Image (cartoon, rainbow, N blue to C red):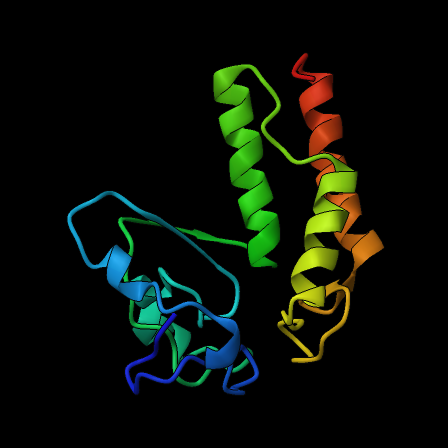
Length: 151
């Protein structure tokens, strides 16, 4: 999301405007919204912008776009999977992508120019975690849902 200065940056402060759609304006309405953040630069982290600046490991210039609700995660993608798993539990059906779907999505987005959030390089990683490590998180959520009878 956009920081106060108006230049979209990744967690390490690098400019990432070329890789991100300018969608902050969508959240500047009365429609209920959810943000999922891990480093301070994500839409929704404006809810905690002042606090973000006080944590050394987070961005120095946080996103200012606020959301109705904010979910914090060690990796934003994993927070999204966690939210999908929670919605799965509420709906009684598994809404998570399969491992193959998730891996293909990562490959496709990188092949189209997306970069890893930590290295800012075009590589099959999610915030520094390999595609296999990322899949382990998705699989753990699938396993949890299966253990409570949601397949």
